Image (spheres, rainbow over the protein chains, first blue to last red):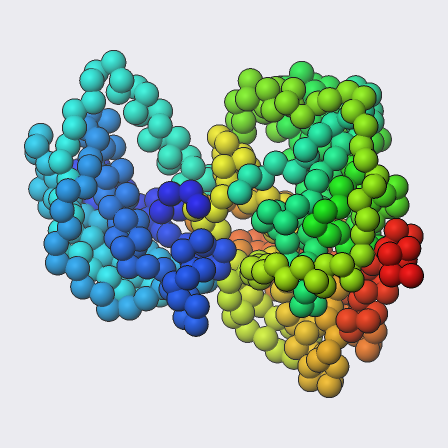
Length: 152
Length: 319
């Protein structure tokens, strides 16, 4: 399995928020054992989806100056589930951002119904040496191409 | 899982003709079962083996500047199924070559006997550097090109032997949800495309695109689900629909992670022994792929007779 847990970015406002999509397919490795009778995407992986989108949002908002590494997740509320065929809409919003760290709120929806809410995802920020920023930018914009694909 | 479908190229006439091999093993990701305990390598995915073989020939002939992306296949024919342990011999031939596209046909053989044929395949030539680092492609080609290598045609075949090897084959689901089924003649399913899928590592390293054969698997599974439903209603639930031919296979645009493919199947003809179905693949209301196919309705005995017994080697075994 590739560890790319969001498929597309549908909305992005630098320094503020982003919305993305994670498609759940019946071929996902994590569905083999989770669960045999009722396949659903594990909640920790949905949190990872939100965290990946949040990290991307922070790094791109900082003009590739910082890499965000998740250190704490607080206030998880699970109200639903997502299985094969569902399209999860991921919302992240930046609460605070400084040179030391960032804090985001996040939520996931399926068909307009909230399935998961995260009170805060905290990241520490690592400064990218100036000479390496171009490389990070390349990687992250490649990720956008990857996730945006270009079809929509 | 790697999405590299050619293990060896042993004959190459630049830009004209190519022959190679794909070995089928129990490790293969694309094993499936039409009937329990008869594991086979997907005969749809087998077309990808031919497509990749032809793709290597085109890339080499154009010095690794372009890579063909499949757009049309006029005809597909499958006369035998493929089992673990088989060595699939692949042949590809270019009929014509232009600046923008390539027209080719190919076939796959087991022990010298053709099992799958594709006619009139058209590939659009896409800049290689946008899909795959050209140096990487060149190195992969050098790794598999082994001019003059010989292949063994010794492997014995036969479903009887396989019956004794109880190896679990994880069932594959090529679509994710049935949205609507209106027997006897209509069905709508969806397939979600996601970046976690392993095949995006190789297809393609710089631009993830859903492989054409997996679009086909989704379209064909949609058709099979509809026909299975109809068979069951008619009291013929012991029969399974098996793909034998397809015509007018068309791909109109790339399908990428984040897309949700909606498949609309329509039953055109149905009798107890076979059926004809068309399926369209839609993205946001726009048609991106389509296929017309013939399905044979086989019970287990007919399935064995039709898709395995034509092989002289297996007759020898069961005698």
